[in-house]
Image 1 (cartoon, rainbow, N blue to C red):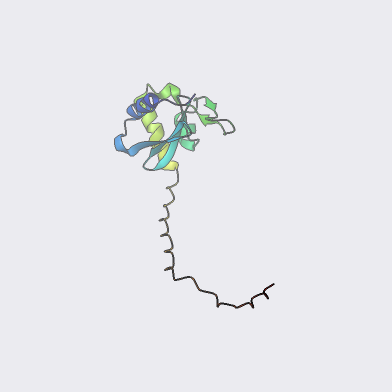
Image 2: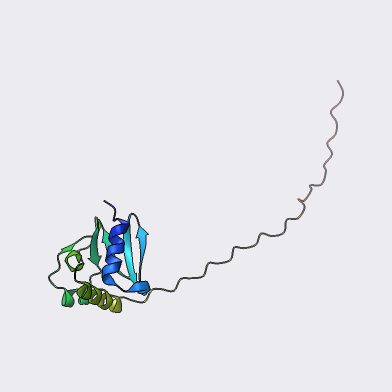
Amino acid sequence: MPTSADFIEYVAEQIALGARLTHRKMFGEYALYVDAKVVAFACDNSLFIKPSPAAESLAPRLPKGPPYPGAKDYPVADELLDDTESLRRLILATADLMPEPKPKSKPRAKAKPAAKSAPKKRPATRRPKPPAA
């Protein structure tokens, strides 16, 4: 079941970081970013925090599970959604440990097509006319 927009709004409201917290929809689910760093995923209306030492030290008892089939286990922070201060502290500590996003490369300008010149004409070759019958 895809994550609802209402759930994302609720999570953002609970974390209360204003414009620092952004999200992007991906395959019906969401990635959450703090200062352009991925810190969590919202999948099936559950909040999965990126695994890090911050999660181990600040919330060691959170249950773990995969956010999507084939993924490794992530701490599931659903029980922190009503504890704004603990959730915000965990999200910010996780963001501090995540690497800076790679700078996006500027798109290359498309090569301009060469000016079209008139097609080269083949030299005319004359064939002898067949004899009249």
